Length: 469
Image (cartoon, rainbow, N blue to C red; front, side):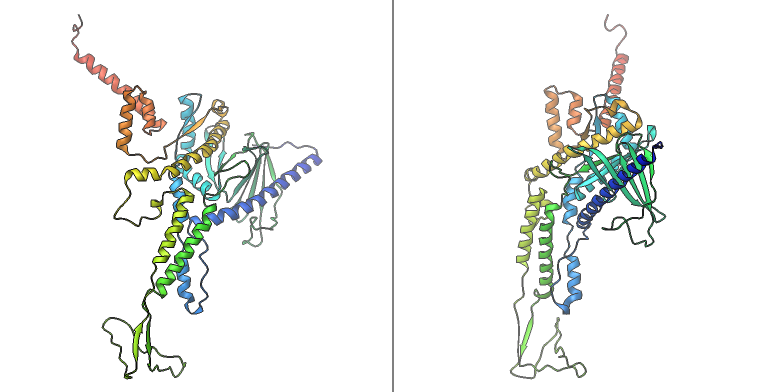
């Protein structure tokens, strides 16, 4: 990047005012985005607010412990079940296999073949994740970015084209850095607070930004690509947990009630009548006359004394209520119910029923692949543009290849592949059906050709010179 050439003073001042206004507008959006993302991240990390504690001051320490125990990691289960099935494994362009290899090599060089899960998981949790492209030539770097630091605004009428992006992050020396990217300019500001506890993310906070450094954006595009989860024409990405939070809140409310029941009413409560109870002379509080336990005998000298016990409470009603809520959680999230609970271990579901129950989850994963795939295509084209690879940068037919989200029986798949081969399906198409990546297929192709040449050489060596005369 190069410094923007000087212009008339008024034009420079006007442009700086526009950049500052855009920075402040995006910073306001980032604050709201962070609040939403942090709420869902708390659920994902099982650090959400526990249920309200019953008004019982005498049992406050015990109830506080039960409150913390009642939180469940249902959100992580939902997100991870989807994220673990979203695996990009290759690229296909109209420019041929050489261009495909270049695109994938750039991704691998940035370790994004492994870090792609971070992008997918954050998109599912926060509703949006980001990937940035930096550098040029052979030094292009593709990196995951967090919705806690980055936000964007799209071109009106086309959410796929980013018009501007803002990244705000703390620096090691205690300062804050704000970088604003437009398709023409890159502006950066730093801010220092006297109070280290303050930050630009606090609502209503006015950051003491220094004079900006404005550079020309030589890439000609905003180097951030948003990965929005289930967007619509009326709204941006939405967290996978958005409509699940009320259900999970009900589950932990019932879980707390169950724990309290276990703590208080599941043990038989004893009673006694016509029993003299001594009091502590200092405190005036009644002394406990007996202690329960094995090999202990309760005796009273008063013939009128009677002992008894109230019936023990049962927690089955809480377990049934929790199971009902988990069933709703499974239905709304479309995650198979056996992922959440398996109460009948003596009669586990059959393999056929497991495959059928995953239909909703499979459909959801395929839908997420469509949306996220478009974002990955934008990343590849943007990285090609930064690397000077015009062939890929302008390829509108470029697409990413995903590993199948379906959990298939290897024996069934092998049988299907054999039948496909019998009806004349090309070998490489069968390899693709089996789930091999483009890189694996290329190695298998080379190996198959080498084996064919070796077999031909062995046949030629075994054939006598005049055998065909």
